[in-house]
Image (cartoon, rainbow, N blue to C red):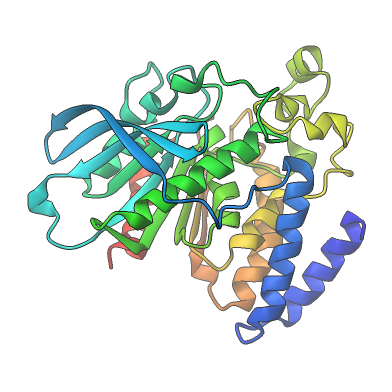
Amino acid sequence: MNRTLFLLVLLLFLATCTTKNVQDWEYKRTEILDSMQAAMGILPDLKKLPPPAIQYTDSVRRSGYICYTVILTVAPDEVAPALLYMPYPAEMRKPCPAMLVLHSTGAPGKKIVDGQSPQENRACGKELAERGYIVIAPDYPGFGDLSNYDFEHDRYESGTMKGIFNHIRCIDLLCQMPEVNPDKIGVIGHSLGGHNAMFVAAFDTRIKVIVSSCGWTQHEFYDIGPKAAEQYGGRLGPYAQDRYMPLFRTKYQLDPEKIPFNYHEVITAFAPRPFFSNSPINDSNFSVEGVKVGVALASEAYKRFGKEENLQVVYPDTGHHFPREIREMAYKFIDLHLKQ
């Protein structure tokens, strides 16, 4: 089925769907995930894997929590370095909500969300720990302690799918921890972390709330200017790097009409779970106009589930940033769905 026809079928389905026809909805969701995997590669089978093994390598005690440096063994010969924030024992009288926090593009990797980088307004991991959440913040392949990751010789067709696999395994770890309430887990990310938060939430239904900051726009609106053609060979070239989705180039020739998924479909795949998007009007990476188109399309799913309030988008007058006042809005959104 070509993409245009699939979209028409999807919208027709959403026009008649109710929460009662769960099986039909799951079928449509599976179609979307299949389309994502066509561009990202197949998600490896997770069913037979043991729980991730965890090795603690360092710790720092701060006010209200301890920040551990850990290494997760997510599969044989595959590791995911991460920061793990744990509230003090006095705060652990009952299982806590937890957050997977995904960093933006930058050499420090996971340290970005701990505030250990020149980039401002990125310390979501540290800030959520201060609010009493258990937090895990892994390195994305190519950054931090995975800066030398070998994309060419791994078993994945894209860095994006490797990221999704690692992030699901982080959720596995949280779910096995007695300190965590497995029904109260969310994900948040900025930029690179913003769309990775959306991707993992589409595949993992254990994630109950999703926050994406400056993380997406419809493919036909993505345009970072002339440097995309000069440096990456085309408007969608930045997406086609080895650490992201090289099939965008090798399989789909950087043509948005050929790419088998779009962001409104990713959102549709995790609807009606609560989703908060920070989409600044002057974001030079992700066009706000493409966000508005995507939200209009994805909102149909939330309407048919009777959960329109679960889809929230803010459009601050700023650039590719996650300002403190917007982060506070996002944190309150998370609190609403994970703490009440």
